[in-house]
Amino acid sequence: MYEWITCDIDSDEMCSEVYKLLANNYVEDDENMFRFNYSKEFLRWALRPPGYFKSWHIGVRVKSSKKLVAFITGVPARVRVRDDIVTMAEVNFLCVHKKLRSKRLAPVMIKEITRRVHLENIWQAAYTAGIVIPTPITSCQYWHRSLNPKKLIEVGFSRLGPRMTMSRTIKLYKLPESTATPGFRTMGLRDVPAVTRLLSNYLSQFVVAPYFNEHDVEHWLLPTEGVVDSYVVESPETHEITDFCSFYTLPSSILGNQNYSTLKAAYSYYIVSTRTPLLQLMNDALIVAKQKDFDVFNALDLMHNESFLKELKFGPGDGNLHYYLYNYRIRHTLKPSELGLVLL
Ligand SMILES: CC(C)(COP(=O)(O)OP(=O)(O)OC[C@H]1O[C@@H](n2cnc3c(N)ncnc32)[C@H](O)[C@@H]1OP(=O)(O)O)[C@@H](O)C(=O)NCCC(=O)NCCS
Image 1: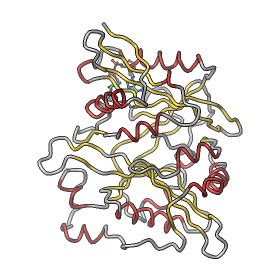
Image 2: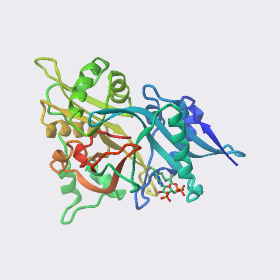
Image 3: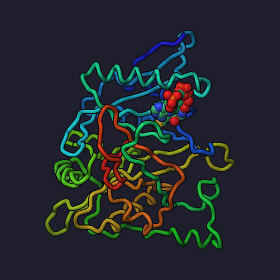
Image 4: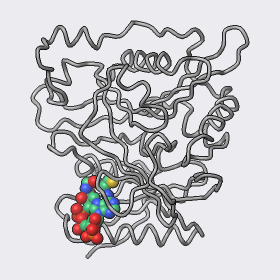
């Protein structure tokens, strides 16, 4: 009645099928007002990093109708845990069609990805979930920075604060027209070696973090239109790359609003500040996100993010994101600030 398939994400038809399954059935907020709407370009980017295995892009179809009803993926990554560099699968996009929920298909999907990961002689995995299952290595909280407060309030994403008017709220979240840091510019291919060095140094302080080489940095951090945006600070004097920031684009569908169908959200990705104060660097990230017409800028409280969230007017969200490792024991639960890994 059902059949396993390996999804060829290169194929436009297959990519569209996956896109539709996720757009209609993937993660929603607790009140079912919003649902993640990963773009096709994003899916292609997320699923084809250096060394990816096609066999880890797994679907389930109804045999008779060929309809795609479930999906799960893994991509390979080197993750450092303390001083141990481990090749892992980053597992993501577990989705079961709404009509097939609560039939214990999810554990079957997880078993099959596990089997296919083992076939590549890889025995560990990293993943995140909004729910608590055994046993998180850490639990992070989402924070949200309004860029377009009027729309966010109209669609029910946020609420007018007590004793606040719309015009005071708009004023509160207003940002400068242009960035403040001299030498702040879009990252280019020529920056890959410098960004790799900067990032490697920076990530070495966290207990769990990706172990990126230049190929990884080129894939994950070189700007891709509508998917990932990255900026460097190039010292006007020495032309050294001193700082870096990035965010990815993940819109959400707005379910049942008359006026708006999409919430355009930027998610803070990897950030490195050595010369530019982190606060100023992130404020510049907010400014470029606003210029690019994002409605909201989201960030987790991991790495050093805590130090800018309140000051830059992020508000705490109600969603938690729990991080997990499969078949890897870490002795103590981490603080979010000890985590240097951002999963999509
Ligand atoms: C998550 C989802 C695939 C679970 O499917 P389901 O039909 O609701 O649940 P099933 O009956 O198939 O399976 C239930 C089991 O899966 C486990 N499970 C549910 N969500 C899980 C997750 N995100 N990761 C790992 N296991 C999960 C449950 O703990 C339960 O196991 P248990 O009884 O041993 O505790 C489905 O609800 C879905 O597609 N939701 C929207 C997308 C989503 O949230 N994806 C996960 C993102 S992390």
